[in-house]
Image 1 (tube, rainbow, N blue to C red):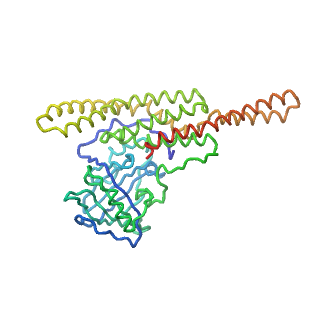
Image 2 (cartoon, rainbow, N blue to C red):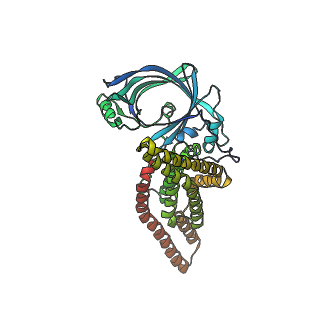
Image 3 (cartoon, rainbow, N blue to C red):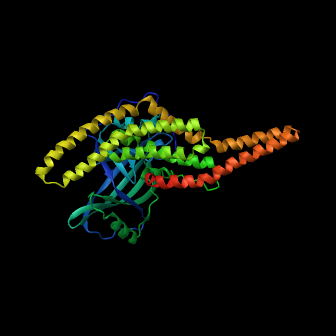
Length: 424
């Protein structure tokens, strides 16, 4: 897991989010283009040309970027805003706060405290983007913005790097024309994008969560570490969104990561120290139970809101009152959740999972060490009986490792299959 740092010893109070904070979900497709690319003719109206100047903030070790999170101060025609982007499955949640102050808002720092700890947020890059494009209409209804960004990476007034990107961003959430637009743009010369946000590309970092699975013949402990790391990274990346409470998917993915971590520990129990693995699974069960009530209410609210939208105004009124009752319950549950997410039990669980990625040692590793100790003993012993017993013990250690190797591919295939949807 990238930069699994120790959380602060004294977490902030529960996050209080001002109504002035705007939260939206970005549903977009990014494509790569070369210098010769031109937008094809598309039905719609041209978008005004914009100049966006964004100063990105992160720690000196790029903890946010490694987690797929970006924090920036954006200026456009005198308007200043702080924008925080959080991972949300294949989309991203953008939280914006209109604020002219020159330091990141306290609200955003509180949301990110697991990633930041006591580390300072500093400016890491300034990007200047000239944006132009078209708002695509279908049957006189706006469905998507297709924009071409000319990006300059600036430092001390000098341009260090230039690149272009093409984006298709959904405007009407009920429309599904993005794949059709993508096909037209690919026919015009657009190519696959590497998935990196602009900042990550500007800093020449690898894409978040891009660590490849170890080779099939790699040590079994490497496979366990890889599986744990992916889910730990996924859980921590969705912690800020769960704290904010604006998008149900954040909490859902945090809960998914919790279940998958328990599944990894259960499937690999023969390779792990039982007391360690069982204790960690118990704490993960506690976290899952903590997240459960909020998730259940999110599901109910989504269902009844959809049902309400299908009714006429007269029949909708009683259901509206019931939905308001559920929303009040959800707010109460969120307050409880925030209090629990800042207590020492949760912080200790995060620390333990972070350590596990670096330090997990199982029976497979124990077997290797046992064989090494036996061989060292044999070098000093002249007893034939001792050599016979030692030989049998060496063979047992080899059998332990062999059983682990045979079981791991099957176990990991099952874990990967169950986790693919969560990992995106």
